Length: 176
Image (tube, rainbow, N blue to C red):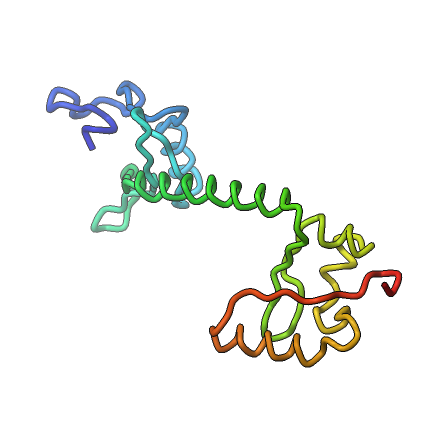
């Protein structure tokens, strides 16, 4: 607790509003007042100095006689999780940029249904579909003539995890 609100024994009895916390843009007093007013727990992510993150929970303090006699604030350190989320978000953004900027037509297909889960712009543009039209279709609906067996075989291999990628021919919106 003293890492967030550096208190000493001399601070006992002082209002929390008189104490300075290491939290950035978070006023514990405001949340404490809200909890006392509504008697509902407040829970939110807050940042502390030094890029440290916490889940802050402020709830009513009930005595043994079930009388509200203040609030209890708890802080769970979630710094590692927040940093992992940031790394994952950056990785997803890099993937998204590479996926969209690829000069190849790239589609992600649900192997069970053949539905297009995702496609890059090159894929639907090249075939003459809008993105919404394209993702409403399935691989089997726009396969080129003569490739039905191939596509079914490849999807089966993907389901069995014998493969995760294959190349096929698709019919364009104009039938080509």
